[in-house]
Length: 382
Image (cartoon, rainbow, N blue to C red; front, side, top):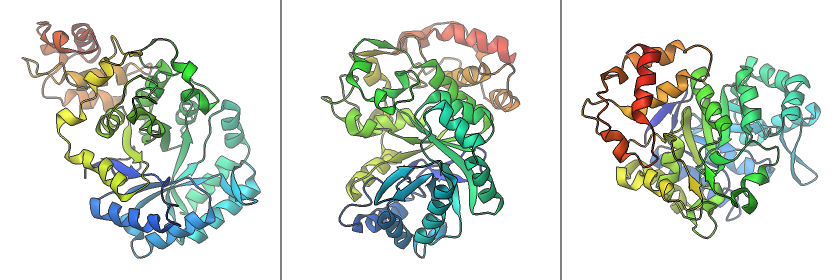
């Protein structure tokens, strides 16, 4: 298992994490089986968005005796009321829900306290100004949560939260179909057939800006909906008109700026093992570029996907990394010092480009790589 730094939190998390979707199956006995398998395979990060008290108790039992082996991302504002799940901004309900969660999980602290499901700008305003954010900060000051997170499907909302410097971790839906869609306050728009009725070209710029801003500000991204609820794995259901593999979906998500961990939903031990097998997959099995380039309904023409099909460069320039640093440098008004420093440590720089164009003949997306190298040289001075 490979591990990544979760933004600026100091936590080292497994690239493949575990969602909680299948933990309630087999009368909750699946929960212990998944945790046993996760420990065996080196998965140390999991998400618990569900408020069902029986599921929370099952997770608590599964953690017994091995709490320190797992990093918990659990959700505040996801409460259980009248026998069903409810998303709440009512401070009394939120506080009661947190107390209930801690009791059922039987833990002393939560590593990432995730403010649950914020997809509307006015909802973020309620969170930030209505007492919820202050309460979460209070929990952090007491050591009951170690880091503050937010889950969202809306890049506008997520960006506002990230730029407010209020959150350290963002749980966001990342996959090559959702990345084409504009911001919406209705998450169902990401699934609707009409959203893909016309030919779509290139990543939504707000989503790209979100990922790059998270990278620049040190906010780690944990990924939900990597497989689009399974639709991307099925040719008949995929909005793109073609299917991807588990390895391709994970590789795509992990190549986005700031992404640290893909939370793979698993309804069985076999499904969890299949996701973790990504770590042993060959480059050919991980390669998503040619699949994306062949999608009948979608085009990424001119957009660098950081796939490295352009290489090898005769001057040994890591073209994908140079392009990623170029994009990160262009997000704000000034170049972040960390980006400049990381670019400077590269073994070869854009200024060494001889404009041979060999890279462009291999790029599946028709990226103007030579122009990017010129821009990077001018921007960084190397």
